[in-house]
Image (cartoon, rainbow, N blue to C red; front, top):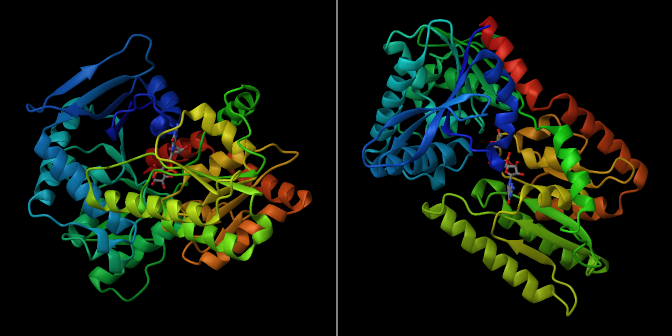
Length: 448
Ligand code: GDG
């Protein structure tokens, strides 16, 4: 069995957002004597370290970034250029002179580290948009190993891709991976369209995607969650006294990093629309939005915070009564076991991103429900999850009327319909869990 080496921007340290990935990869890493390489901390002298922890099931290697690398590579090109453009928000991109150079340089340095570690039979699995150039860098160093890539965020349309300062280069970077995994079919189609557009090939090449004389091997591998474990956590939390019913009203929940791709202002406006047109629902629904901070150094994130907080304040000012607050907005992270219990209690789960690679909250909400009395998932058509989860109430998050009506429908949905929808959703979430995801990807990579 080949040794598995995983490369991701952040080294998993057991906290929530990376938790799923660890579960997915732990078995394969442990049984192959594998290694996880990731970034850990900022230091003036960039250094790399190999660490083995007592009792840990796999070894880790870390690299640090300098302050200016952190700015140019991470905050700059990765999160102020690639992130907005891949999410269809080229208008929010900030192309700064030198950031792309820094991004290339960090990738070259990390490739040097990886090349030193790699042995001939190892399989390398690279995670996400921080490392688009890594296979090209490794190939230039003579590395012939199988290198897989998984993109956790959407792959852009041709229109958006060309908003990058280096659209063609990104495609040629991708061509050096042995297998490219995307979240959804949508992304595979976008890659095909981008190549067709940029190379001005008008004939459709079914099945094969070629660029610069190389064939690209790309497919959708929708990421999942550890559904069984999450359901257990939700069940246990219900019994603990840390999660209590909030008010007399029924709970509707949203949980998202405070990111402009998650559509929070649109969601709040849809809720306002509901309150304007459904007076009978006043004091009946308590909307809890948990939105922990993220990338606060980037201007677009400061702007989305202001807009979101302004709207929450305005809606509460207008509709609150002495014993009812329509929106509870928490701009802090909430412990995972409490989240799980809240999902279970919530009659409606509201997941309305404007664009999202997959969206794991949708899957967690479904896993946390009681089978005999499940809540209703309202899901954006623009989440990768919508391809798998069409038994949810699918909505266009830009349309406040449609979203408001979906909330009213969810609130009044008869038990039998809720159970039917939930059963279909739960089957998908349980069958295609996070272990299915890593097994499917690694199997195809091994065959590449
Ligand atoms: C990227 C892609 C793709 C959130 N708030 C708290 C908290 N969370 C947890 C959720 C969930 C995770 O963080 C968020 O996952 P998402 O999938 O919703 O979104 P991104 O962070 O944008 O992740 C996305 C994902 O990668 C995986 O491929 O699905 O499309 O953008 O697990 O529950 N956890 C805790 N407290 C919080 O306040 N404990």
